[in-house]
Length: 286
Ligand code: NDP
Image 1 (cartoon, rainbow, N blue to C red):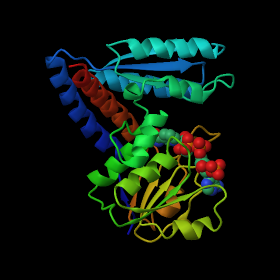
Image 2 (spheres, rainbow, N blue to C red):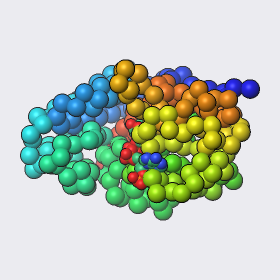
Image 3 (spheres, rainbow, N blue to C red):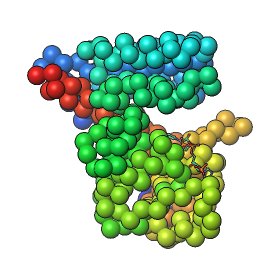
């Protein structure tokens, strides 16, 4: 029997409707959540993502603004832009779109964002609080994946989870979140030997490596939940994930499509993080 497809687009739509209701309630109290996105340079994919984020904000009533800086912007100017946004009371979330041009140190920029406005969840304080299980802003992609799994009614506690990829934005926070949810977690990367055999142990397999259709049926235990985070554009313009959908759909129990899987959930979680940040900042100001 082919895998049940986890429809991230439909789930994200439902979440955006919930967020719109939350925003309306905050607006009644005179609080308009505000997100600032900082974009440096002209990377076409980054522009597409930023446009999608701004549109999603508008649709739920979040104020959004894009600060577009030229590709040769000095690091000091970018840091000053972030500092000014840190101080603004009408901006509750700040997101610096990655990747940055090579002359800018991403760590310096991530460290400069006020932790309670860090809606990407990349600041070391949020990373640390996630690791020790304290209150924090959780990175949007892993948060969206967990939300998707829960909305599908799938159990995480006690399950074997394997995460392939150990980036700071997806793999590592995903592993931390799954651990927090009582899964038994294994994290794999490019130096993991016998990867298909390790992946085959997973009840829940999350793949975030950036390699088109790399994970095929040899990596998947029959009936497993397979989450494909990858977004890869092929030479012919098609978007494909890191999972070979055609092969894996005959083995997995549940599978996310690309596009229409994790991507829309990531944006929905950005909206949620922004609203939660606005609410928390308003409460802290009282
Ligand atoms: P990175 O390039 O930062 O990290 C890739 C990770 O995958 C690394 O840990 C790397 O290992 C590992 N890896 C690479 N090749 C292999 C391999 N052959 N076998 C095992 N592990 C491997 O990528 P990101 O985490 O930023 O992104 C991963 C993918 O997810 C990309 O396609 C990206 O576009 C997509 N993405 C999608 C999002 C969404 O909203 N849907 C959001 C963010 C990312 P090592 O550490 O050893 O080098």
